[in-house]
Length: 162
Image (cartoon, rainbow, N blue to C red; front, side):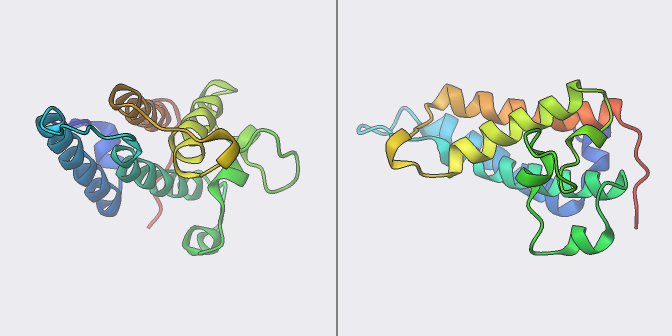
């Protein structure tokens, strides 16, 4: 199963490394789908299905932010850049780019919600608020990430930088 059509604008925009992560994620999704009924004990948390897509989303966002002129080349290649801080609508300081993203409020909201749901709420461990994803919820998170990336490519005109 392919989550993203290989001839789509989204696929074409992605870097080869991001495409590899998407393909890895598709392998994981297919494997789990084909084998989920075999597990007698069941899997308690399907968050692992989201990981390749969340990582691809991070790479996609960094590339988009750079191409859109929202971050510098040095920031793009930096190990210190924090996408959540850049994207967070609650930060009003100079580090937030939320209000600078195309699409009024719609596109930045999609990106922030997908980031928060697909990364922050999946991969952080909070003892007071432990979360597990069921199979269908994990698929829903993956689809939200893909839709957010597709919204950027569909609505924002960016020039790819070399």
